[in-house]
Image 1 (tube, helix red, strand yellow):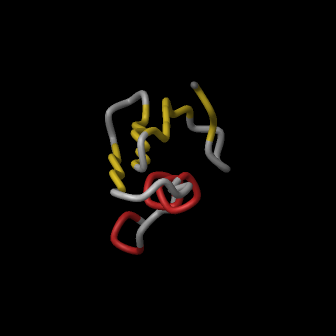
Image 2 (cartoon, one colour):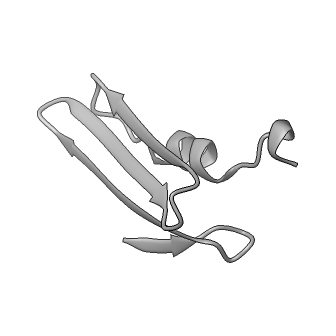
Length: 61
């Protein structure tokens, strides 16, 4: 999937759940940041993973 953050910057991502596990992988198309979230429970990790990927840290301002 290709989405855009609140600044219009595109990123690619994919997620899934199977057999009691969940995962999310996402990265900016320019290579500036990426995140992989793996969970040993079948719960939705999208919100937390997207926050890690798209929120700007204070050191990046």
